[in-house]
Amino acid sequence: MAKGIFPQMSIPDIINALAGWGLTVSQEQLVRPNADFVEGVYCACLQQVTDLSHESLHDPVHNSLSASQVDDTDLYKAALTNNIMLYHLTRFAKAARVEDFNAKDIYSPERERTLILLSAFINFVKFTEQYCNDFVKDLRDRSDALIVERDQVAQQLTIVQQSIETMKAKIAEDEPRCEELRTENNALRAKMFATKEFQTTAVQDVEQLKAEKNALIKRKEALNGEISSISDAITRTRSRIVQSPERIKRTISTMSTTAIEDKRTVAMHEAKARDLQVKINALLGIEKDIRSCIEQLQTIEKEARSLQVSQKELTDLKDHLDDKTIEKNELRLRQERVEKQLGNAHDKLERARRHAEDKKLASQKTIERLQREYTEMDSERRDNDKQVEELRGEADEVEAKMANHLKKGEAELNELLAEYWKLRHETDVYMETLANKLNMRVIAE
Image (cartoon, rainbow, N blue to C red; front, side):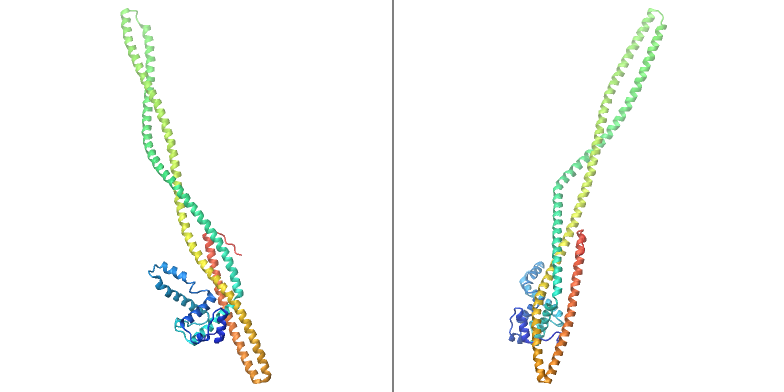
């Protein structure tokens, strides 16, 4: 069984160290350990460093079992809690340089093995308390800054959510109007097509009436010319008429008949001209109506294009809203992870601060005890050279242990610093990602 690289502690030292944390144990319990006692002491040591306990695991275990939809949660709650606690104790033991920690050390403890594990745990806890003050202070400052940034991000998230809700309300408010516009657009489109067909028919009728009008105007001009020529011919004929009564009568009778027919023809043409004028006036009214219909059709087309643009903007706005909803969910999940990491960091900082204070007191007591031992050894050296040599050997051994302890402390401190810089790098990456998602500009301090 591995002894580890930590100093071996005696039973009184273990009792004193645990008593300093408010945990009362007896020598009988350490000599004859049982599963409940060992688990309680190990969990107390773990709580000094990580602030994890059975009570703190109650809610996460309950939530995980509820999420997994297990029928009988009480049946699995204790087993899951024990497995999680064993996992964290194993990680804690590895940090304390005990690589072979397992469930047997909890549920079937042995005296020597228990003392070795307690020595490792207590030394590790005291080391974190003594040598991590500056690191803890810096980490606490960083944590305060992260809390401020988290609050700012939460405020920005609230603003974004409010804007999203406003957009949703506006969309819901505009939806009935959009529906009315769609219905009106469909009705106007049908009316536009019907008006366009009527316009085509009316234009054809107008063209036909214009052609008839032009033909009648030409015929009227021809008739006027023919009447003028006939009048001239009558004048010329009168000048050549022989003064014969019978002949004059016949000529008069013929000319009267011709004049009556010509008048009848002129009256008929004038009636036709009046009818054509009425038709032309009606055609002008129709043309004016058609122009107004065309203008209405153009207005309808403009409204239709505007409605299409509004529908397109509404679709783009819906897509943008869906993207924002997905982005909001991702940011909420990331925020929850960051808050969880931040809470763990706070817990570690608080434990490290308490451990540092306890370690400082313990170190002062150790220094005072070493000074007393050195005084005793100095007085004994005057009496016996052999005892002096023995004491010098013990002092050298203590110095070697202190040097080894310092080396281990430096190595573990370097590991803690590496973990801190890794956490800080991940936090910076997250903040940069979050800033890019929110279109924010992050200014490095």
